[in-house]
Length: 272
Image 1 (cartoon, rainbow, N blue to C red):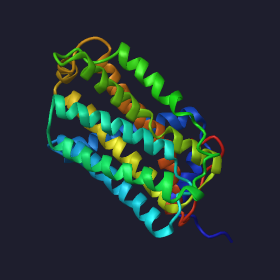
Image 2 (cartoon, rainbow, N blue to C red; image 1 turned 90 degrees about the vertical axis):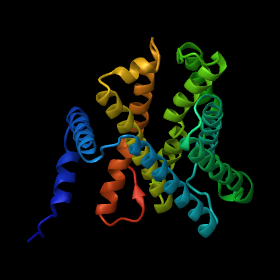
Image 3 (tube, one colour; image 1 turned 180 degrees about the horizontal axis):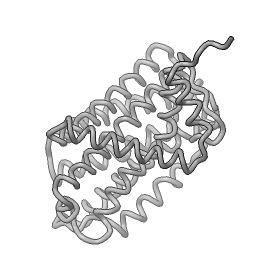
Image 4 (cartoon, one colour; image 1 turned 180 degrees about the vertical axis):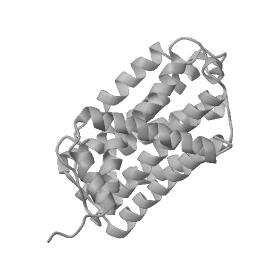
């Protein structure tokens, strides 16, 4: 006689058997439910943005722990870290010249740690770097973001160079994780520390997206008007949503793996 399955395992099995359209519908419903819950329990929605930065910092701390303890960068994408450093540097510049606040300090700390990770992978731990798996050319990511930023950027009173730079870092942040997902797609097996780091990125991106969506709802759309006219306000919101859904599939398999008691995450084909 078979032992009864736990509710979570039964739900995961049922979900896995559903067609893609049903999975997409359930994902949208789950996202909306999470937004409603956050709106009810978090009264100052600016705290969501700070929480997103904090979770991102936790993810980087896990990454640093992995590099220092295990002395290997296997499974990590150097190109994702370099893209992260680029958009953080540009965003830091925009913060200094446009709106200096607490987020500037957080970005400075995150940039410093990211540059340290880049240095460790590129020089100290180069022998364990999976260069053949990290095979997305940076210009495939950077150039389209730069072109879109030239066309669609804020219409505020700031200098045009600053406005284009702002748009560029928003677009680049949305897709900076793509090389890391490509590495995981090529290896199919993700060790625990890398999985924790990418999951932290997914949570941070969701909290950031929730911050923007709830701000728009609270202001009844006035926030979009404050950002400028044209396509820019919509592109900001779309970028936040895109970077959340890019990681949604991975986060699902991460949670499933954790509840299943698996230390190493094995990804099915075509997940990321």
